[in-house]
Amino acid sequence: MSFLGSLLSATNFRNPFLRTLVPSVGLAYGIQAAVAVPSILGQTERFYDLSGSFTYISCIGLSLFLPAIRARSAAAALGQAKPAWPSLIGALNGQGGPLGFNWRQVALSAAVSIWAARLGSYLFSRINSDSGEDSRFENIRNSPPKFLGAFFIQATWVSICLLPVLSINALPASTFAALGGLTSITDIIGLLLYVGGLSFEVAADRQKNTWVQEKKQKKHEEQFLTKGLWSKSRHPNYFGESTLWTGIATTAAGVLASNVGTAGVGLLGTGTLAAKVVSLLMCGVSPAFVTFLVLKVSGIPLSENKYDKRYGDREDYKKWKRETPMFIPKL
Image (cartoon, rainbow, N blue to C red):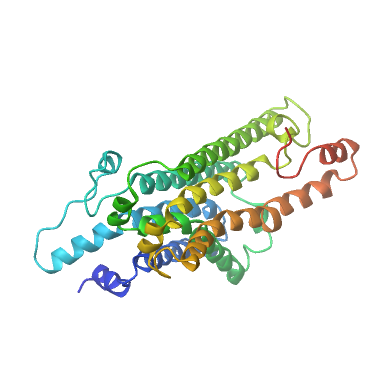
């Protein structure tokens, strides 16, 4: 048996959710470990954020195509003709077949991939313009255990955030067939939240990048950004990120908490209260975790502490903090 066949056999659980979750999470930790080794040896965090985005996209791709990979591997082992790869176009016209995708799987997978590619390229460009260093790693890049821990924390971050999408991608085609082809209110609300949140995050990042470039060009002498979306919230980019993940979770929850969704996940029975609660928790943990991180751990606290130390005694800074909400934008 090939190495791939051994991995597929070891993760071929009876439960469809576990058949997708375990390989995807394993891939996340594998990629982060592979990037951690040269990063630790070179004592550089240059590729840290970019590797996070690559991990998101890789895990999404694996979760989508894993049923087809299993089917093709099984056919090859039996000497039979391999089934065709599923078509993305087929997901849009409802002709995906037994190994095909549902439009929600494609939409949510694309949503995460677009966000990850955009954020990863933005952060990679930013760190390259800052001589390849990130202030978050000042005290850990020279400590291999701490640096390795940062990569494993990132793998955990990816795994938790992707839980709603991995759960959706784990559902068999028969589940979506039973659900029907109609768009639900949770689909609409979720996708609107995603588009709004992503747009907010992108606009905030662009405004800050423009402000930084103009400062480098001596076009202004401002020490901190208080215009545009940054006059509505002190951290509009983080608000946008929390919002877009809430949208992804909302769309996923509309499917996973339904009777057919709980049957497809197959954890605690079909349509039981416990099954619905677990499904909602699997979706809600993603935006809750993102919001917790930006509010309490690595996002807002680090930024606020840095600026408080630099400008905490300035009246204009105190006025901006007093009049501008920290997270949820004012109207």
